[in-house]
Length: 210
Image 1 (cartoon, one colour):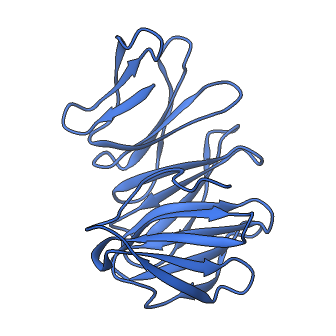
Image 2 (image 1 turned 135 degrees about the vertical axis):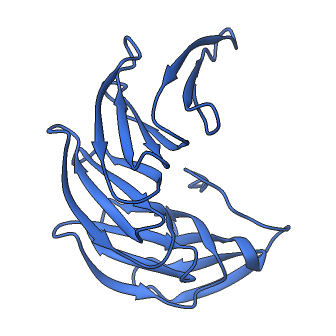
């Protein structure tokens, strides 16, 4: 298990078997989002106040490379099918596209204000980005990395976002509305909003596909 420690600039490594701390890894300032490569185990961390990401070996817990992105990276998401990394940069209102194998920045894509999360649609080659301050979802073509559509005025402060393929849903946690929005994955129409308890946010894979 890997845990980012915002104030200590560390990633903690914890054994899920013994429930004990194995190591602390020094990274950049204010580490936030984290993801893990499913094959080689590399750990990818967004360092918000260093404006970069760190790629860390899970074998020796040493940093392989720091890659500069734009301002205030918060979320980091690995597209394991194409070996690409998507990073949401909150203050620059952009998503950085990084070639994981070459460890190289490919492009910065402008989206709405305060992007936080990315949901990867592997079937239709699209990226869905939740923009908190714009109250919108940006849809990016994952082939040419251009914004093809923005779903505006969806809800107030959308944050958590994920895909349910069984029902062809995009599901969004609407933080300030105390609702979860359900969107049609095929035509992007709003299906319904479900009221939930106060302040739904969520980060990571929060949709159970059954």
